[in-house]
Structures are given as C-alpha cells and as structure tokens.
Image 1: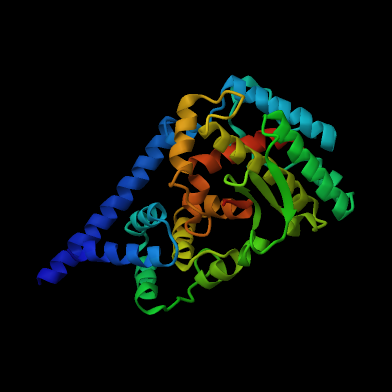
Image 2: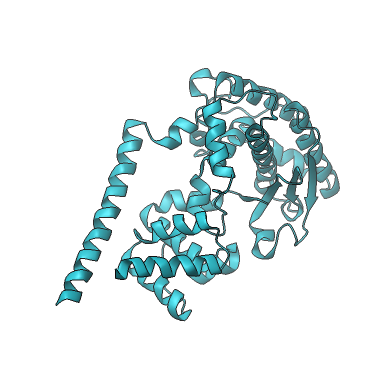
Length: 101
Length: 243
C-alpha cells in the first residue's frame, strides 16, 4: 500500500516537472531498483527540495543539473547508472548528446 | 512490529528486483540475444547505404585514416559500437580545423545536404545555429544537434563548430551523420524513405519515436540505450570511421 503511494507520488512529481507519461513510468520503474541511499536522497528532494552534496563517481547532483541540464531526478538516475556501470556511464556522457524536437 | 516487517519485506522485494534485472541483463549479453544486439545489426542493403555515405564523406574530408577494419567488412556489419571503444582516428577534425569557422560551417552544411540528397530527403533543411529557442539553457554547451521531424529540419549547434579542437570538430561531423540517421528513421516510419529498411526494425523505431522517446535531460541512460539512439550512433560510427 505504502509502496503504491510512493510510486504515485513520484509519478506525480515527474509529470509536474515536464516528464511525459512514458518518461515518468520508465523513470519510476528505475527508481524502484535504485541504490537505497540514492533513493532516500531523491525522495527527500521530492518531499523537501533538499539536494545532497555527496560525490558519487566524481559527480554531484548539482553539477549534473547545472552543467548538463539534467533534471534533478535525471541526475539521480545518472548517478545510479554511474554506480552500477561506471565505465559505460562515463563513456556515454563523454559522447555527444542530441535531441528530437 | 508490523511496520518493521513491511519495511523489511519492501527492502527484500527491491533487492530481489535489482538482482533479477542484473542477472537478466548479464545473461542476455552472455548469450548474445539481448534486444540491443539484435537491433544493431545492419542489413546488406543498409551497409550499402553506409558505403555510399562513406564515399560522400570522402568527397568532403579526403581519404579516411586507416583503422583496424573498414565499414565494408561484411561480417562486422553493424558492429560500429565496438569500434568506438578505440581512440577516435580521423581526418574530418583536421580538415575542419584548418578552415575558418564560416567555411567549416559551410562545409558541414553541404556535407549534410549531400547525405540528405543521397537518401532521397532533399526536402529537409539543415540549420547551423546557437539559437536559445533550439538549444536552451545548458544545451548550448552539451547538445550538438537536434532533429525536428515536424519541420523536417536538422539543427547543428554552432557553438561547437566555433571551437578549434580537432576532436570536437570531428564530433560535429559524427553528430551531423547521427542527425541524418534520425531523419531517415522518421522517414522510414512514415513510409517515405526510398532505401529499404527491414520492416521489423522500422516497427521498433515507430514504437520508440511515437510517444516513447526518452529525452537526455530526463534520463540519460534511458536516452542513450533506446533503439533509435543506439541505431543512430551505430550508423554514424560506421559512416565516419576513419574520417
């Protein structure tokens, strides 16, 4: 029950900050498998807007947001990837990014 | 007591999910049957398109530098991802760096138009810009190109073409091919692309592009590993290898 509410709340926050429904669903699915410490910090941001200053694999959430334009949840998702697969995540970041508009 | 028990069960469920996802991914890669590897294989007809594009690149940038393999190696078809693990070797960066910013922009623009012509997409436009309406906020320093299907336009970020670093300039050329591939994907989904792309691949692109595209700013891993991005990187790597 509690888990369902958390999922609903996270979805609502993501939709509010501009995620499409598909992006939000995919992101929430990944959050449910996220490193517990990161998820705790992300939920704190969702609830109170507090950003952690911890450095993970050489990155902070604020750096990823300011320098790469990630949303805060995207920065957490990236840090989780960097913890799981540091080389792949860093190599991907070193490549170009692009977009469809 | 009950809440502690529920908390423990929730944590166990999360951990089991994490481990299952990890095993699934590793097993898929080990057996070579992951969805990603199947999608990355280019058909012989697509490899022909790659060879034509390489000839076009040769007209603009000169002869490609030697690498361990060429795009014409049949057995290696569609394995451009692997080649990117090596240090990029190429001539495009050098050629572009030798030109004034204005001339290098003109060269890249002509190169993209030539590729669009090659693939029967002459009606599409190329624009080199630093407009904040296209590249907003941090994108000006992190996003090399964009593709607008609605407008039929490819936008390349002029900020990067003003740099003198050969590696960055080479990336601009790679990025240009990457965006052309996105335009091909969309044209194929619309049934308008002349060169034939296998139906199952077009269906995967359609599912990804129509309502299921993940933007880089929203989830970089999701963005990076989605089918249309993997395919565009693979295609661009094959076309520009050695350039």
